[in-house]
Image (cartoon, rainbow, N blue to C red; front, side, top):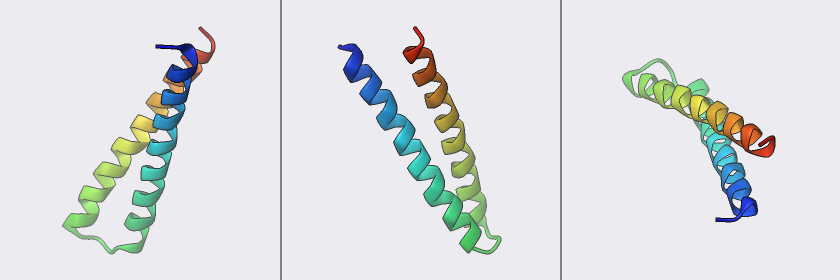
Amino acid sequence: VSLESRDAHLSALVQEAQRRASELSTQVMRESLSLETSDKEKQLKAWEWRCKLYKRMRTGFEHA
């Protein structure tokens, strides 16, 4: 696997995590408190965590 393809894959993961976190954040803000919102908040936290992880991975890869 080439360095370029790894970099592209990590960038795609970061973009996907940011997109999903943004979508869930919007949904959570729109909806009132409910069990469904609680589930979406958990999903939001998971995607925010993934986003941070993927960014750290990409930064580490770029500086390796």
